[in-house]
Image (tube, rainbow, N blue to C red; front, side, top):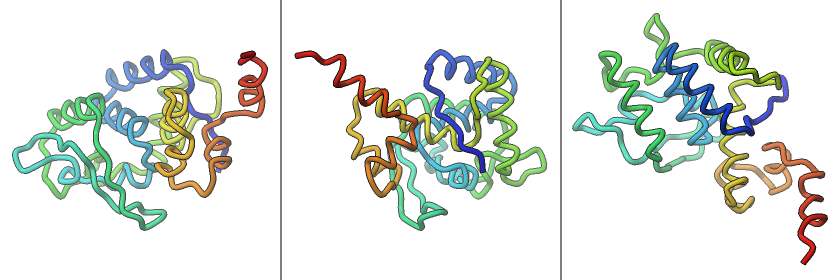
Length: 187
């Protein structure tokens, strides 16, 4: 597995959303939910329609699932952006509650390779040259949470990491960026 980077530039994120949405609302929803939830791709791809829709056919306020990798329960709220993307996606096709949320043209779940190809093609289309993959979605979530001022220990907990140092390395915060705090503060 290659080491991939988060998407640090919000303009590139917006550009990727536009490229993805033009090509497929499903792909746009996958990307948008991924960068707004921090879920691993294995958990995104196994989501069903029932995981995100309530009995009235509205997108739920929260998603509850059991993580494939850790076996731990995860329950988190959906923000407006993710809810809107999911609602748009669900309007584009006839779905059943037990059906996969992100299904392939053949009706099964998208594969990791298909998701990788989708994300990589969109990244290249907007000029991103760094290594990008399905894990980029999760890393982008962590990176931007950190940039928004979320405490690293909170992000560590959200991503189920063992230590803050692991989370900092994971989201691509370098020693130079940490040192810059000391060099620029000058109180």
